[in-house]
Image 1 (cartoon, rainbow, N blue to C red):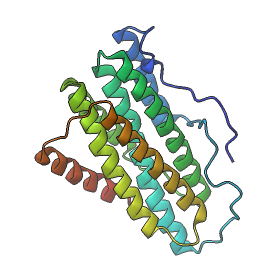
Image 2 (image 1 turned 180 degrees about the vertical axis):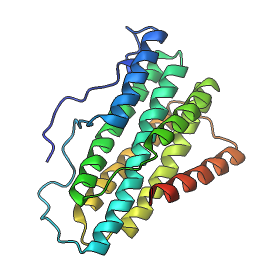
Image 3 (image 1 turned 120 degrees about the vertical axis):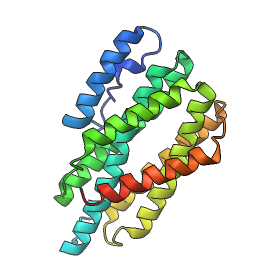
Amino acid sequence: MYQRRQAILPPLMDPISLTPADRLLAGIDLALRSLTGTPRAARPLPTGALPAASLDDAARRESGALMRVNHVGEVCAQALYSAQALATPNAALRRQFAKAAAEETDHLAWTAERLRQLGARPSLLNPLWYLGAFGIGLVAGRMGDAASLGFVVETERQVEQHLGSHLERLPAGDLASRAIVGQMKADEAGHALAAENAGAARLPWPVRTAMRAAGRVMTTTAHYI
């Protein structure tokens, strides 16, 4: 189990002391650490004292595939929050992104550890997912704070629904994966609510539809690759 440790927040999230150039360099560092490093969680794995489950090969493969998809989602979350923090001049909003990003780092560490436990690998396309999510985050951030927050709300709502579907699909005996996904789902709902309270604008339905379509492509591909 992960021990409780201080989260290492990306330096680019510091809203006061760093210049935009500093935050850009820190964003590059974050990308490298997200894709090649071992993430460290501030919170322990949500599995607690759950007994070790004995999964057959089919159940283990299914759990591994679903947790790989969830891991990809957390890689994308690192990119999205990093890009949106870079794009906004609003220090208070960067602080909000920092808080959400810290919880997403926990998710990244939890899913990476669960993949290891299941004997499954991360997606081979993680660099592509990160690059695409970073670009989307920059575009969202450049549209203004209200639209950027609206993008957070829609993203987190879709992720929350996606995690709910995984709770239905995960093998009943895989209590560890189910505990992790359940906590992630609760955290994502909190991120969406915080963005709404901060003044998020509702995105037009064509944008929401396009986001759902892109999400389906990512989750379907990451399930296998």
